[in-house]
Amino acid sequence: MIASACQQAADRAFLIALALPLVGLAFAVFWNLRTPDAKPDEGEVFRDPESGAFFQGPEPGVLPERDSRGELAFRPLSYTPWPVEAAEAQEGERIRVDVGPISRRSPRTFVFDRLLSQPSQILSVTLPRPVGIVFEEDKRKGRAKICGFVPGSNADKQAKVAKLSQQQCPRVGDVLRACTCTTFVFPTRSLLGAQPPVRTIIMYGADGQTWAKVATALKKGDKSDGAVTLVLERPLS
Image (spheres, rainbow, N blue to C red):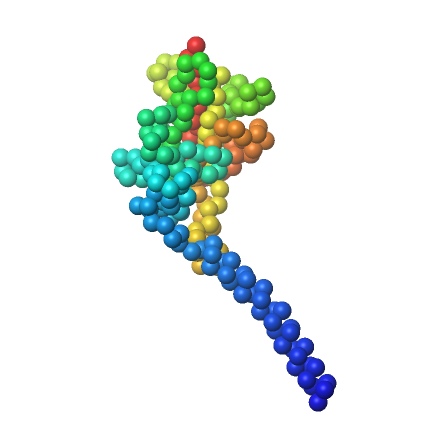
């Protein structure tokens, strides 16, 4: 009887030890997948209807900027799109770039402030892969800039055509501010295995990033993913 009671106690202890981590895991999954309590109108949490992602505002009462379609405008910070405060609507350049799942990309608005001390222009150029642009690191200022083109590449050809047609194209000396790249985005429910990760084009923000990280982002993507869009800042003097 004593041995049987001891065995039952040991079995209960084993089941409790097994169940507690599972309960903790279930709670963690629930917490990560929950819908934020705040409503978009409260100025604290905002939902991007295109991606379904929720974004936390910097402080209560601060509303995000929306473009003419009612969609959120973003500043790209590394791989993260960060909503822009509506109060900043008069600052920076707004550029529309196609991003989203490979099969259904759509134009979204991205905001860029000028970084260069001299007069400059912020522009976007789109090139098929492989692009053929040679970048170098400006170690003193912590930026990546164009130093040349691979002979015969798409960028080289576009630059030659632009001399005759005034077409917008990359130039030596342009500073890289952002670029599109390919990554896998996990839909909210994919954590439970309901949906697989989706191959997605995103905007990578190069500001404040190390050269190693920028170089990695520039390499992310295949020819089958389509063209690459670069956002550049060009000195005008």
